[in-house]
Every structure is written in C-alpha cells, then in structure tokens.
Image (cartoon, rainbow, N blue to C red; front, top):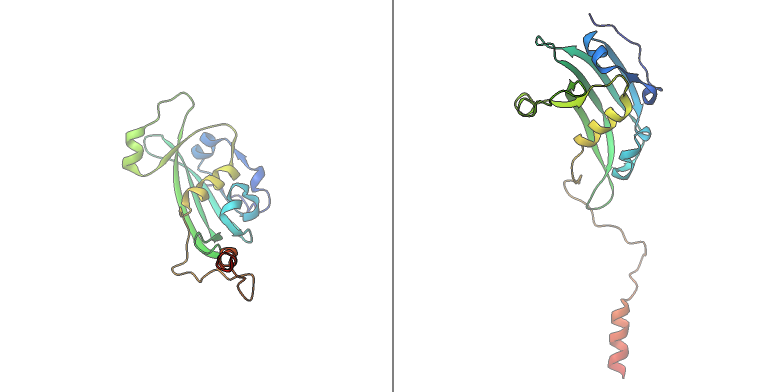
Length: 173
C-alpha cells in the first residue's frame, strides 16, 4: 500500500523520516532541492544554479528486510579540472539502501553480491544529508571536458619574463 505525498520542493532540508516505519508502510515522497542548498557540493561546482529532483520510496522484501530507494536526477555544472571552466554533468542516480537496525550485524558479504548499500535505521533520518551524500558519491573524481581550450591570458600582450630581463642585464655587465 503506497501513499502518495505531495511534492515538497522547498522544505527538503526539513524532512525527517522514521526509516523503518517509512519502509514498512511503503511510503513515497517526491520533490526537488535547489543545488545551492547542498553546501558540501560547493567546491565542486562552477555554479550552483538549478535543482535536483528526487524520489524516496520505502519497501520491504519477502524476508522482511527494510529498504529505502532513492532516485535523483538533474544537471550539475561542475568545474573542469583542466581548464577550470564549466562542464555539465547529467545526474541520474538510483540507490537502494538496506536499513540496519541499531545494534544489529551489518551484512558485509550480502551487500557486495546484491548491489545495495546499508545505512543505520533511525527514528529521525534527515533526507537532505542522504540526498547530498548520494550526489557526492555519483560525481566523477576529476570532471573534465573531452578537450579543453588553453586558458586565456588576462593581458593582451605578454609581459617580458623577469628572467629574460635579468639575462639582458647580465649580458650588459
């Protein structure tokens, strides 16, 4: 039984869920978060315009394991590591997170085989940090353009090298 919740575009940073209850009831939330609200991304971005659309669904499998399924989509303007210009990165993330009850054993081998990550279940799980963490994990290590232009000089004409000036002085002595 899935319960549809209206879009929560402006209040993503205030959403807190009881993870196990959310999964048990099969709840679903959708919304958008402004990129500028994700502070840990700031040094990776060329600009912070735009927003990331998200959907969070709770589910349980036949064994009774609780999961949060988080889907993210959007477009980020990252800083190219070669030319420091803007390079667009299309974000399409689909994460399935196993909720582990506090004090229970973490299933390490199972995680690698099944392709999902685990998080500790809590009665007050904040959504914004979860979104931000998944975005950070999805970013390329060193975003670059296929080919970059040479950085432009700030001067129309190149000033003579101080070493060239010293060489001329040395020859004149």
